[in-house]
Length: 93
Length: 93
Length: 93
Length: 93
Image (cartoon, rainbow over all chains, first blue to last red; front, side, top):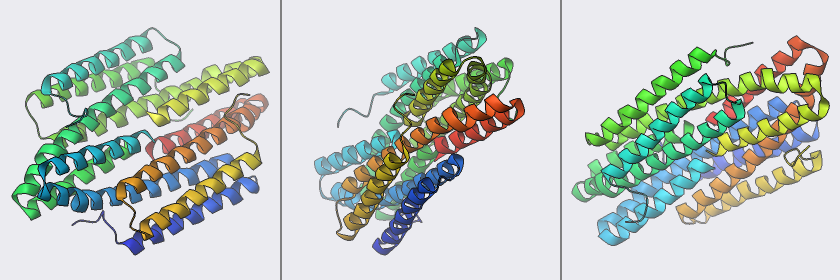
């Protein structure tokens, strides 16, 4: 598959970096950094989180959903419903 | 399947309503309506468009992608890649 | 001011183009165009609408909100509240 | 002002909770938690971050931007431009 799905270690590495960015946000607030610079950093964290979400979704469609479809039509349809609901939540968040 | 996918007529009906809302936005601008009211209306159009997108995505996963997976592993994986790219574009728009 | 705010004619021109895109979406659905191509077009409409929203917001902050702040402290704060609520709605839509 | 702006301690408390959620995401990935549950949690972190961003933006408009407008017309317009650019970045992230 293409470049969306990462392996477990890559996800954890990315999330650790995001955790560090969120800790950095606390320091920025604490040091009364200029608001706009904090907002720019929040945009960057949002984008990083969305990139993790897209990777997970790709892996989910390519493994769980694909396996369910290969196994059983009803189970496949249920997995498609569930994935769609998750996508709808991401679009609104 | 659940409530995301609509039939063709429902999509067209929804899109016709969105078209009417966008025409309404032109009238609001032309009549110098208060900006905040126009912005509220834009939020409503965005939400309506996203709802159409989620419906189409659900139908796509449940039909095209499911059929591809049932037919051939490589073709299935390609469809999953393509759907993921479309989701990533929606998340950024 | 910079490039966000447009004049009335520009907004109407942009919205007319968006209206045309939404009408195009109806034709795409009606002609059973490939879902992914329709979704790509929806992403493009979303981006165009957001660009109009950002322009309106810029004009609103630079005129209505600025005037209110210049006139009266309480009125200025009320306009800031109202604009923030509109931004929060856009972020969720 | 209304409920958007928080005091410094509230922002730090919220960001600390978000940091904990991101650490939780690493544990979920490490323990091979079901993807959909991880995605739901990412939606929740996104929403929490956006709520912090809206609060900061409200405080910024109500203080920095308001002060600049009260002081000088050119400086006020520059602050409005800058805030609009930050909002545009948030809308795309």
